Image 1 (cartoon, rainbow, N blue to C red):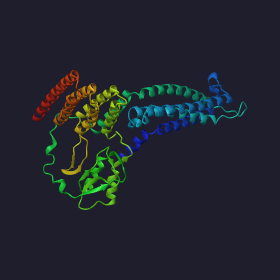
Image 2: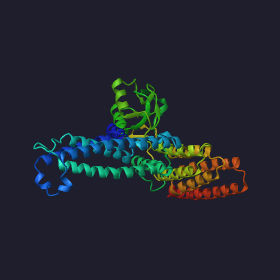
Image 3: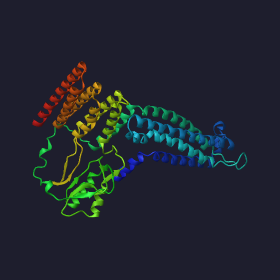
Length: 450
């Protein structure tokens, strides 16, 4: 199932899949209309000669014109798409190019024009004669080609609007955030209704894992871990009566023949076992956001860093990035992260390599903070983000991570902000955010006692 999901994601990211389906559908429609015409619909169509009364020469001319114009428009569409991708890559980051390729609007537009072209060719080759007794003109099919051409004009107008809006920073950042939301909801569906007990005692009563003999399972190829099937790992661990220790998490790059994971065995694993564990992983040339919310955060951080660079100096875009990062971390703050140790029937089976809220928080704001020296607007926005995230969390560890972020910003303010007014503004905001986090921390402590 994991492989099928990965294959479907690859298809969704391709330019050819949806257009190919639409071309096949257009050819099928052409055949249906031609068969309907050949079945003897001339008497019925003769009642509307102005709509269906085109002759063989006129039908050929119209279909040839439509086919040629569709190819011209399709070439223009490809050119516009490539120009938009180049502009977005240079202005923001090359990691967002796959978002353009995944665009349903772009794929549908290309499929529309190629489908109309294929439809016209199929109908054109069935026209016979030129005014003689053997003349055959599929009038309904020709009329439907005219309707498709009008629809193609509407699709072209909408596509131009879509391209103009899709290269705007707000649209790109919002699209990345929506994909990250979906990944979070899929991977972390459970919400924390109350403050959970800290998991410091989960390892009590376990044998020391360091005392075991660990044998590595080498990776079959190099690449980024795009997804993994946890159920398969658990099942293989149960069948082998061993413990699986994941050496890399989703999104990490693995070098071929280095340890993908390790097994607690009394002897090295055989090749069948190695192949079975490798099959639970999907490795590719790039990261994907489906099982890797950190990659969505990484894309937004890259856009913010590019916006804060001296050559661009686009504070407004960086502010939007901070706002959406606050929204993503706010959603993560209320979710239950998967455990590090996974059991089955009281037996430890998998030592997972999972992302944590603290790690994702650092991923989201550390580099932006480093690039935001002397930028009062970004620092103030980050403080507002920490306040919003803190108001949504109910876990003491999250509060501590946010408090560390506040301390680092306070050090940055002391070191880089020299204007009295700006320093006073940021110090006041720091004090307000600290008060919010302290109140939330007290609430968390009360929840633990209860």
